[in-house]
Image (cartoon, helix red, strand yellow):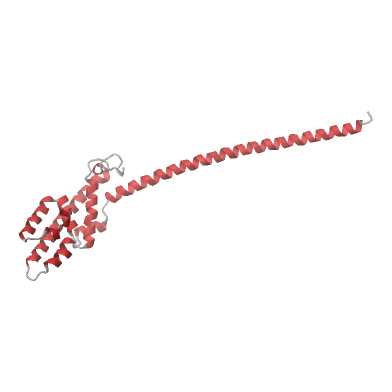
Length: 212
């Protein structure tokens, strides 16, 4: 009884402490809830980031395959002009090499291993079917021009005072990939040139080093 005032005061303080602790508990529970939400948000962002990374990788892979397919199933105006109207020079040689690559791609009887035309042979795709007639026309034009070019060079050898060795190096050996194109795309035309070169006693070791 003598300490009743102190006990009452202590009781009041204890109640105040209880209220403060209760508020702190509520705040901590709120923080915990917020942290849980943040954790879920972080997990969601991580999952989304992983998903975006996979989609980006797939998109880049598809883009690479599409690029390969479009490169081999399209003819630029410059390529068509170089083959149809250009003279036989280094630019023409590059154009023929490009054309040969496209023909090889289109002539595959099964889907390319790089997956560029998915599960279809290139010639059976819509783009392939559209391109083939143009490729065939350019091939026919190329065969005619290449045959004419080598025939002119062989005829030049018959002329007096022709520097045969110089002609071989600058006009025949340099453009031997054109003959290789004939061997691949028109064996009959290539054989005719062989016979013509034999009649001139032309040394194949100079003319076609890749056939030694």
